[in-house]
Length: 115
Length: 109
Image (cartoon, rainbow over all chains, first blue to last red; front, side, top):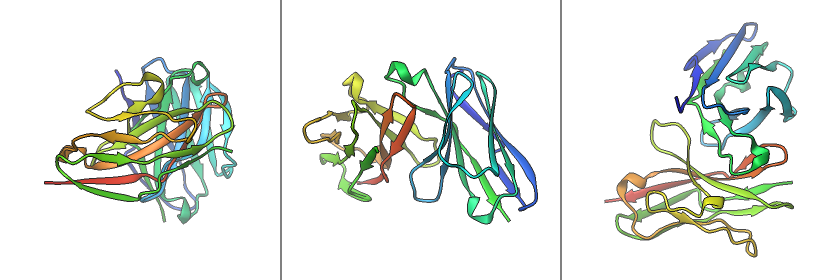
């Protein structure tokens, strides 16, 4: 399996809801990432996990809470979001980036709409 | 701080013409640079990595450390090359990738 799988594909949630985005890879990658992408803009890094430990949090508001239960799974828990959080959320994985030559493998993304 | 600049938001060429998508970067260490491509209704995917010095789908990109550039080139563009292209720099100490704003390439018949 050479893909990163994200679920759900689409999500509509109210500002008081709690929901989770899920990401899975079975390529043996040890780094996993969450990116946020607004329309016609490049992906913006949110979080990096390396060997299941959080290594980068790009000053993301606490209403976004990442979790890496094991080396194949990455979740993003959402709570009390704002309408401006509506975006495409991309998950990616890579081999150990410290060894170099570790390009990102992206999922198809979850299209999130906050109402 | 790392930064990637793609000066052209839109680029349009005719089929068979040469194409060059520009990318300049700013980084204090030794950079790892990539080109990613997104075709219509497909996921963002790797096209080229500088470290491999490969040619993929006829595209090449050479890292020029003196000019801090990593331009993407193809001698004869094809209609199926129409897509969004992102240049990206990875900080291998932290796993942080920074993307340029992207260039939308349109190859006209």
